[in-house]
Image (spheres, rainbow, N blue to C red):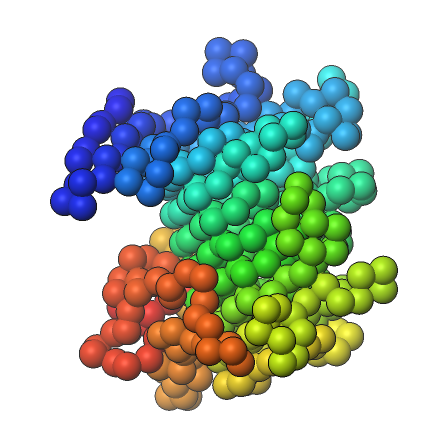
Length: 391
């Protein structure tokens, strides 16, 4: 079902509604991987693919790749075109099929174009979805790796998703989110139990805003910010102007790494911003809760980035499952059994600036994971993490 709607700001949105049900990419009656080949044309003309019921349209990723390398080319959803919104789906991976010798996908959802034109998925959004169970076998922990969500496009957004259980645990090359290009927003996501890093900025990433996420229980670092220095597909060679604010990063790095880590390899040691140079401003890490990230350098390790307002105490999670689904939601408590109040409450920022007075490329969303408005109760500060906790 397709709806066309003209909004008050004269923008037009086309919405493709998908009925609840299971859509198995391995079923010949359904077909192969989901791709969208029709682009919106601007922020005033977008195309939305929406599950009529949140998580009701279940897309099971294909296991029809003939080789391990080919599995990279078969994500659960490949967003080929720009100005697209993918809203409310449940993306489910599959293990390798040992019976017919095929391989499951290493990627859940990819916001990018085709391999020969990877920059065609710009200005796209993945929101309100679940992505889980991709790249689950140890044999897939090789080569280029994978992720629940791969962002290979500029100006893209990943908002309000639950991304969990991707990658054999542990596997240092399969992450929750792998951000490869510039000018993006990752906000209000719950990211946990992935075999690698919760959220990794690498490749040609720069000017990425990572705000109000709850990231826990990933095998390696919770958040890694860096660049490979190669300038993939004409992108930047330095990760600069990025903001990592208002996140809860808890109980990651059991296999190595840090809660939040800014990192450059020995071959590209100058991959992040330069202190005092506003052409390549340093990255900002403000008002995050970092707790029980035990390995290596502990809770936080920066190269040139600056931090303030860091809280290194227990976020005091409350009842940690959502509606009996078994999804851990990482919601801080208004008060625990002892009457203690989570340090997340009213401790976040509503906006930020770096040392050069520049604001984040994307405004901080004024709503939480469930769509509730921030700040609550007439407050002047956001709560930290994906929830505004009084709702």
